[in-house]
Length: 311
Length: 178
Image (cartoon, rainbow over all chains, first blue to last red; front, side, top):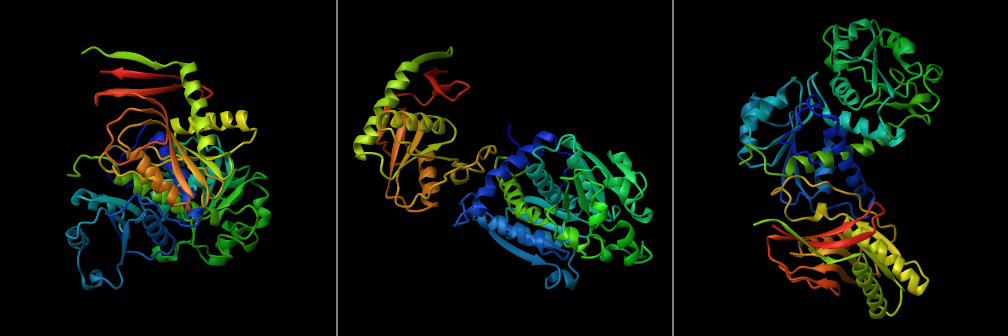
């Protein structure tokens, strides 16, 4: 089979076959990252613009390294320090960037749907690096890749995701991705961080951490996104850490060989105790490592093929 | 015109060709020292495995074997649908080695160009040689094989297929005329 997307906007419309194709492709690109000379000429002459309206270290660096290892020219634009602060609209910024003929725009934006908006208006490929509270497809794919690496297969696994579900785009992408691949998804968080109706996406909802992680194969902890909350949703960070933070004792409820994941950056001592964050079950740095390979695969896949509307 | 399939080589024919190529490789390189077989995914990889066995039968030594996928080095990405990118697996350093690239069919030579780039990206071999089961002509690049199983002049609209069984043992070579 072949998978020839023009854009990568979200996991929602991807089939299990598509997802596995991306993961298999990433598997092949992973080897390049361990070479002495970490570069292949695959995307030579392509220009990739990383347009980041929100702070990011991991994702932006990961996309930039992925592009560079494939020999593309990558340019980073962050909102602070660009004409965005002078009041230019997203569409105007994008049209101006398009006039410089990039091949791919990788965008992170604080508005849900911003990537779709851009994809509808530009000729180049758009890759979503996180849009508002909507999706963060590359994160879900690298999570799936990491789970597959440690567990062999995703089918039949129980994955507990704990934290601020409402504000998390990582969760939404992960629910679509893990469901497509046949895992059981459990969610847990304080009531104020659990959006009503989320179970309709195909997951079980718990209001305490213990029940959610009991006998789980994978425990995915989310960051408390202080920057995304208007009114505080929790009485105090300490109280949150006490009830929804993962520590060594609570971790014993999960399966013995369970792995702990976190999309980063970690609030140490809040959602993850140091015992777990540095413990043998954590695969957080594998996630970061695999992120480069997965993003190489995404950049490769949107670059190939003659697609409708790309003329 | 009706489709037509002609058998060019049967299993014994493929076997004899590979046995001869194995002998030629050993003769030209005066033995197995520093030899590294690299098969090009997927047909070439299967044939390289066969050559490794044959060399073992002749010399009693197992030569190093690697597999490369050249998709990342192709020059036609973007003008066709996405190709699956397979894994490359070469466990020994290529620097200083006498590399024998192995592929099933040689046609335009573009795959071999990509393979040369892929190998050179990994190090600086002593030399690179090329072993091919079927050379069907129509080269678009100045590439010439060192070891050839069979020369088969073809028309552009014809296809050559090398068939393998479940164990990746070559069974036959067919010419498809459309």
